[in-house]
Image (cartoon, rainbow, N blue to C red):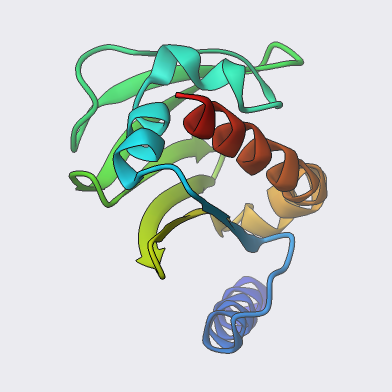
Length: 162
């Protein structure tokens, strides 16, 4: 009974945060504007072996096939944690989401593009789900959240130098 109430309360809190769009350590995002083309950002985002060039939390990353819906790969954190990921949403040249399984939960990373006044806006969104989502958000959310400005800044720098 307590577990059911906890799950219900967690679901309600998550839904309210999503409606209000208030970033938390369980669900956060950052957008940045660049003069680089959407294609330049997309090419950086889908070049998995080079994610380590701009993702300050990664030691290495690899993918088994081309980047597409259902593609699977492995990311290795700076601390050496190895995690499998799978592309679960994919809109060519616009957005993708990948999922990393966690014990009794998941970590999702969504990257998407838009344009405004001739500029490209790119967004990196992260959220934790599942029974342990709150635990993993507490353990890693603040760290991941604090990395985003540097991560997006490196992507912008790489894209604008091409």
